Image (cartoon, rainbow, N blue to C red; front, side, top):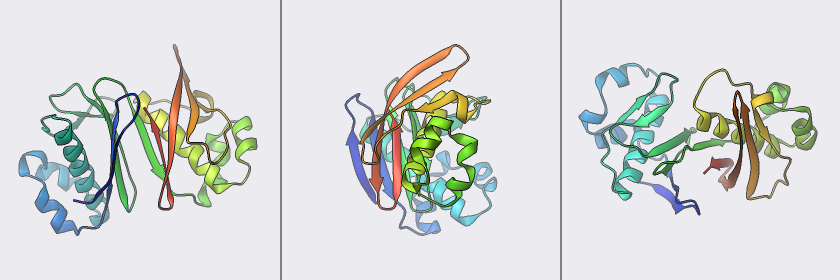
Length: 210
């Protein structure tokens, strides 16, 4: 099981990152039938998406076992936010073509996202960045990627729909080598500040709200 990173943050949240190296069949064989239903698998047709699904469940189970949590599977609430069956522990997950990352905390809401810098971010910058954020990022793909991942992580922490990235998810301008940046969730009656951890893994940026 190639969990390449395991760590505990200062606020007692726990991170695990799995590098995907196994085949589809190898991963499926690691999951017991009681936490991988035929209905779940039938809803995912693309083989690569199935691989990411298998790995996400295996990474969650791995971290749950480390923390002494009985893993009974994952369900989603009315807003589509996943939660652990039979546990009050909070978690967030993200996946790419090569990695799965999961963060857990005993009670605190979390958000995590992992992305690779790409030219696409230049094209959509006006859709997710405020004017101040766009000026700070300019055309730097790495900074654009960090901004995007940070906002995605805040969105996952919030866990509800009808979020406008430009208005409701705000990131304080930062230096590209900063390890901790500041985020703000401002929506309805919520106005909260969060410290966000930025890490570089291979060619990806991982941003955690924890």
